[in-house]
Length: 173
View (cartoon, rainbow, N blue to C red):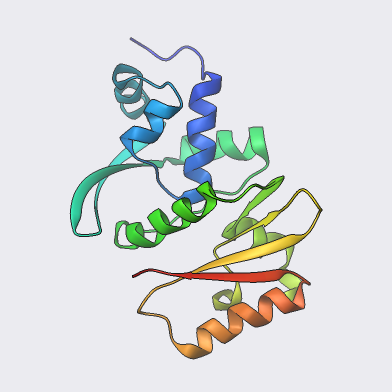
């Protein structure tokens, strides 16, 4: 079956991938994208399937291709948050954090870099994501892994302060 039209459920899935770099099969199920549709999205170049390890467990994740990144940019004005398969535990944690947060607007790291380019001393200072809550308050979020150096964490906090945002960090355990 050829894909004649990108449906709203596809767009919702693409947007979630743009936000968190990758999603998993259960996320497609939540968006009501069935397995056949998922296979066709891969077959016709909208998604790529990638094997990752999260919490010691091997699983498949799905990431955007250049084709679907363009769709996300056009439909949502959102730059995709991209990362490597090695960053899957980090991306998984970011996704878990945002499941518990109510927000009005969401910004990927790429969005934050674009919007606040003048406030950054270097790319390492930008946080992983940001959001505006229902009160209009900007909060930025950073997922801290064991690989982070103290100086990098300080730069993230300084970035938040320079843009007038609340800073929240979460550690991967």
